[in-house]
Image 1 (cartoon, one colour):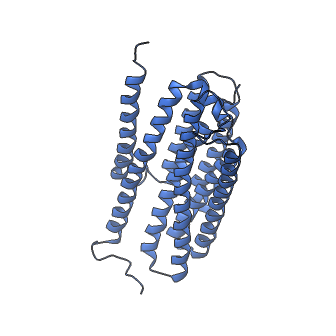
Image 2 (image 1 turned 30 degrees about the vertical axis):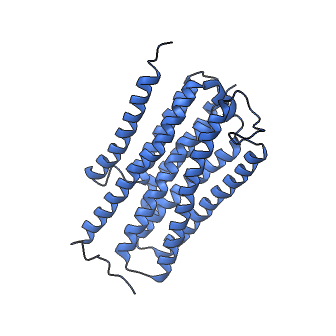
Image 3 (image 1 turned 60 degrees about the vertical axis):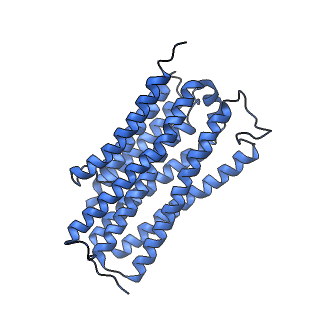
Length: 211
Length: 89
């Protein structure tokens, strides 16, 4: 069942790797636009309702967002080291680093889950009859909060799935060059998801804290 | 892990910048708060792209691809705010 290192539609391993990398970057460029539309919408509405956005943002759990920032930055670090381990052919180190990444990613999702539970218990849901904040534009902030953190969390779940798949692939022992390209591709995706959070954290958790 | 010096430095810089973001968020600076938050976030994003994603080292094609994403994002912001910020009244 083992597949050859070089797929038959490529001439060289280098060409195969470059094509794969290029493909991932094109995908990431489309992801920039996908999240970008939400960022533009957020900036537009925050410009229209600056006070309401500050008021609403103070209701988010700042410790949860901040701890999650640290977890994601650490996971990007373990992923960067994992890519190096893959390139060096250090299988055991690679497996350890992937497990560390999975632990950090699952920790992020666990905190996110706790946070959502907290938000729901406070009725911080746009359109909820007992939505606690005024003016109404505070609900616009929470529309963006749920949409942006929700879509980001879905990306995190996909990332956790990818690393789990990588661990399984590693155990089956397929040809190295191809798997290294795969680890690099998963790594680029993971870093991008971290990159989105780098912007979400100050936009959704740190706004209006200076009052 | 001798060859990971750049990654370690980038990680420490990212943590320091995150701490700076957090501290500045509680300092009353008016519109300066948003400028500082976005400015530091851009810096952190560039660090991740350059060091963790090897964007500088893997050829012009990939840099161009990333740039196209950023460019269209800029167009989206520019056209939207060209309208919003120039409305009379």
